[in-house]
Image 1 (tube, rainbow, N blue to C red):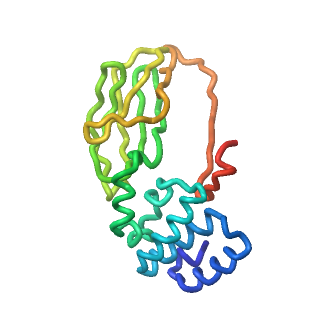
Image 2 (cartoon, helix red, strand yellow):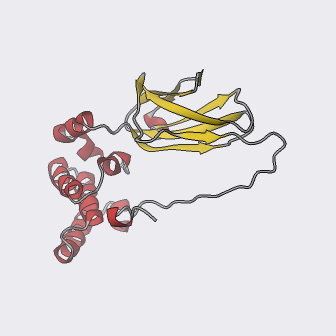
Image 3 (spheres, helix red, strand yellow):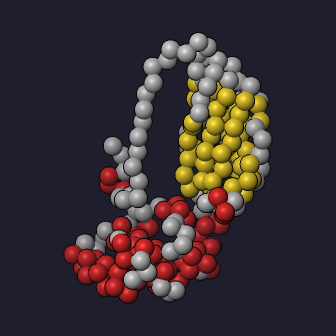
Length: 199
């Protein structure tokens, strides 16, 4: 909603509440209300709408991801801080594999907080990288010295604690000499609605 970006929080709140009367369980409207209240400085009411959105299925990560310029008051509330501490959320986004070659790979993540990120690939440990607020809590880890056309499993660690991704992540390096078929996978974001999450 454009009014959130321009700081017209009270107007946004009025419009969002009017829409909420028509669709009282709409996660995105509840999310935007949490942002609007947080942006206006009302962390308590932001928390109220954040809880409602999460009860409708919006994940905690959505609030952690931001935009942090709007949800700062929400993130500072004692209750939200406690929710973050007690949750299993470590990564907000990623891991995403990129710049894959015959002997190296880059893995991108966005962490839930400032932290040290490392990746271990079947015995090969990458350099530790800091996910910092000034970089929007992102880290790009490069791993070199891999073998061509080899499938590798990897594990991500945040502050020396293994992160459970719910799957065993992996990738295959390119063949020596090239010639691989390339598959491009795309995704969209921002308008997260649980019932449309899977394509």
